[in-house]
Image (spheres, helix red, strand yellow):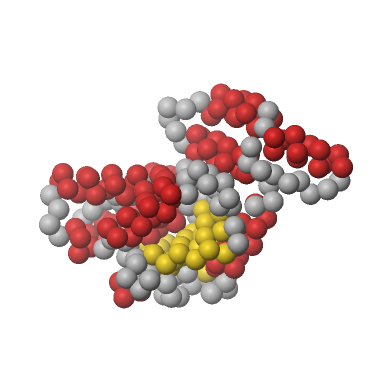
Length: 259
């Protein structure tokens, strides 16, 4: 529907979410957050969903940032609540049971870079640009950018990007580990679906636990090694593990059922 901030398309076992505000360079506003939250909450326990692609409408911008017009009337308390809400929605993406890939088809700035970083994998078009320009407005990142950028590119490069507000190109993003693939402009979604198709052949319970284990590395309250041996026991005792072992011995493709 034309009035929705996000266009949702189902393609086999995958969903493509397109931020659909091209007149605002797909800037994040309340409607975008509401619709992201609704989608990821609805499918959080649905293992028939094997993957999600998030992209932006058009070829100019993935998401060019937050909608600054919504900042105008905010005081300190309102700003903190807005930031907390955005972080909560992005945690839903980061913790989703199936892989979420950002197909970055243009500017990924501010909140757009933060959205991309909350996804498990990032594929960039050759003309994509990444940056955290909040200091230009006298602000700091609000949706996790100050934390995830360090995790992905390291302290030195993250410090430079956060303090200078400089953008980096797709090739630089690849070099620093912010993205895993750079493709020809217009091929971002196709490459993302190619990756998801490969992952969808694996055990869905194992994929979910791998995602949670990766997240545990950055969770200061979780011992990732303890979680690993616990999750290893969980997966080895599953029907999927039994099927995977049988398929290996019988030299056939496994048929997993997420149990």
